[in-house]
Image 1: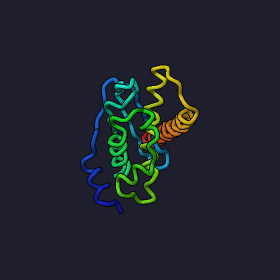
Image 2 (image 1 turned 90 degrees about the horizontal axis):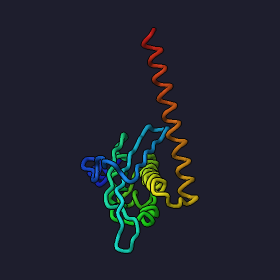
Image 3 (image 1 turned 90 degrees about the vertical axis):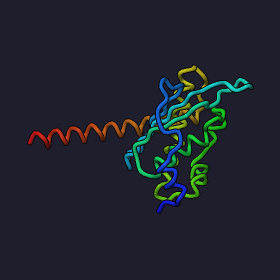
Length: 165
């Protein structure tokens, strides 16, 4: 079962919404459970000239844990430099929530992946170097999104075939 903090975060998530013309957009999903997250970044420069997350928002189609972890990643990453934010991990999210059922730990990974993907998008748009680790995460996310798109096409075709009978 979910603890009170996770349920409260789910019921009143922080930073829910969309940023028009985001500097970085991460779209990730989990083909097994069907959760999909969109994470939007607005980047600015701090006094040291480093890129930092000025604003961050999310939209999530998913369960209690998916929505709660999406909210938490925005709270943990906001106002951090991209380098600091990319050091966040699933355990940071799980601890912030005071725990998650083991079966729902994948939601925290999805939230981390959404941040990585949005950062990747920003680095790509601004012609900045992309680390091998971030490139690897991006490739994994691309495979997941393709798998979800394929499943949706299969579903649509099956429904269409059924409806024509």
